[in-house]
Image (cartoon, rainbow, N blue to C red; front, side):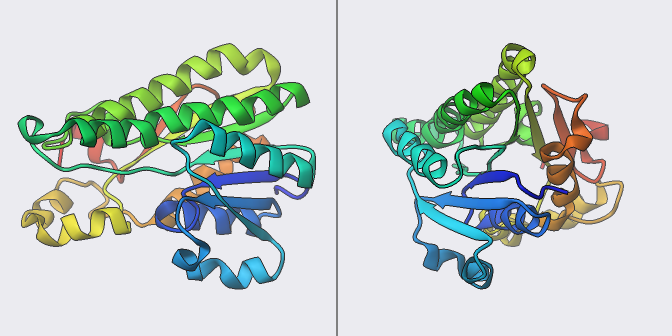
Length: 251
């Protein structure tokens, strides 16, 4: 499906990123994962890395120079970049009045600024090639207000708008830019909140499919957006949420 393609996954040692990296690799792509964490944090990838299908390059997505150096290394190795999946992300759960300047800067730097700069660095190569696929990770919070997540929602709204704008600018160059907005997914970032929320049964009751999502539920959409199968789709944010947003509900 993706044989011969070169893919980069940010936040690739954990959360949804590790699942996307495995899926891209299994589909035949030469896959590079990047994260600020050392590879030891992603032990589930070690077997595949030993098999030569996944390469790890450490980078800080909030630093432009770090991203540019990573892109240079990938181009030195493969001479092209076909797929970029921007999975790196953080969340601050605080009431708006308690949110600090540091909370704001940290969230925006990683979720929005870093994503844009990586799109910029990889997109330049894709434009030169005449083709590329960018998949960004947005959120329910891009459209719907979520309690105690003002900065997070702002950053994800920015992700969806960056997605639309780049799709508009780069479509003529053969570069497709889309986003996935997951519903309530059991990732490490959400797990502690899910355990202490106290109303999780109520949330599940509002999901038409009757359960929380798993990272695996997003893989089909991610592969679709990364492949030739999505060649008439760009600038879209696809909500993969078990139907949760059908009632415009929040959790």
